[in-house]
Length: 178
Ligand code: IMP
Ligand code: MG
Image (cartoon, rainbow, N blue to C red):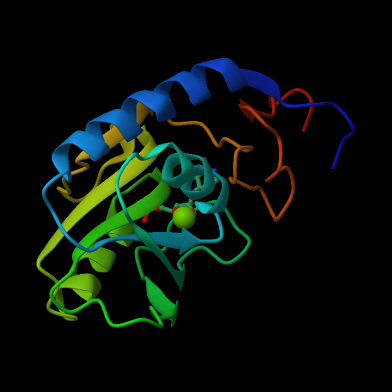
């Protein structure tokens, strides 16, 4: 691993402005819904979930789930495994899955099915970033922050081999620096 900071792809200011917009839309859409549960997907979504949830103007509760699909590599296996389920009872509640990034779409598709098995009132999805060109399965993202190209990004919760999660921006390592 080198010491250079990742190159900025989405700045802290751009991210914060977009999170505010998404929060306003979610607050309006769920205004009349009781029992909104935001389900963050560990570990990558922890910062997005923290910022997004604190910008909402409606009541909400927080749950976490953990999945594993890649190990420490950067190539999707397509096989998703649930490592930790929600602890609270989400039956009859409005579930909003909060993901960091959607790449092939396998993880989010699996999670939507998982959440539906708990018999919630509804299931919707939010993701900060989508790699539009990498989609392998059709999955709806109800609240999307940004579309990006097919490069590996880090920061704002996202890691490469557990590094760079707490950067305030989203960036990438230039191949020449790696
Ligand atoms: P998918 O199942 O291919 O959509 O993969 C989604 C998961 O892979 C995300 O929740 C991330 O944990 C991880 N992931 C995919 N692309 C990146 C990236 O560029 N940086 C960090 N994590 C990524
Ligand atoms: Mg993830």
